[in-house]
Structures are given as structure tokens and as C-alpha cells.
Image 1 (cartoon, rainbow, N blue to C red):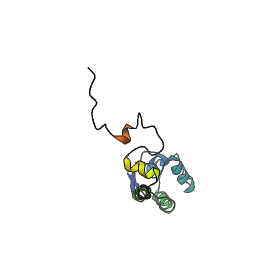
Image 2: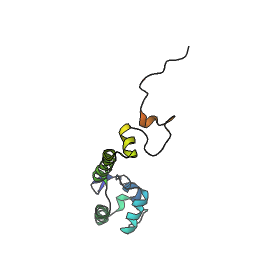
Image 3: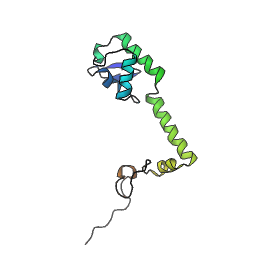
Image 4: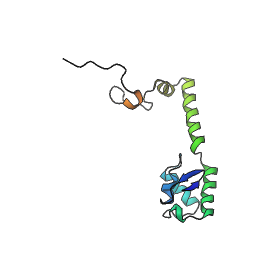
Amino acid sequence: MARIAGINVPVKKCVPFALTYIHGIGITTANIICRSCKIDERKRVLELQDEDIEKISSFIRQKYVIEGELRKKVAMDIKSLMEIGCYRGLRHRKGLPVRGQRTHTNAKTRKGRSKLPIAGKK
């Protein structure tokens, strides 16, 4: 395992796909990083030199919010929505879908299991 920006990434995968193991970096961002650092996207992490890995790590640290900082930022954003009492904050507080999905049926993931079991018919 190679360490890029403090995260272990698999060495047998191509660089863009290995970068997606870092929370906050998707495939599009990974491709942008590879192009910016002038690294061939078909190379495997195993084939990278130490200076290439350092170049990627420093670029990510300068340009992107990743891992713990990103998780903290998202949590704080949700908390602020709940504090100001906006619609999205209320939905988060109640544990219901936030983005306008149907709740009459579906939404079992957000709502959880039903509280009272329904008695079977005779």
C-alpha cells in the first residue's frame, strides 16, 4: 500500500482509481489531479516514483478538502441547518429524506423500521 495524502491506496490499481479511495476525491477529480501533476492515467501506483507521489500529495493538500476535514465540514453544515430551523434542517432532525423523496411508501432507510407491528388479518 502506498500512502498518498496520509491515506493508504492500493498499489495494483491505476492512479485515478486508487485516488478514489481517498474520501472526497471521485473519479473526475482524480483525473484532474493526474492531468495537473502530469502523470499518465494508465500508470499503476506501483510504477510511480516517490517524487510523483509527493507531487500528488502536495497538490491534493493545497487544492482539496479531504478525509477528516471534509467529514467535519459536512457535519457542521448539517448541524447549522438544524440550528437555523430551515426545512432541510427539520428533515435531518426528524430523520426523514431531505431532498424531496416520497415518504408514503419507500424511505425505509431513513425512517427505520416501523415502531408498531401491524396485526395480521384473520
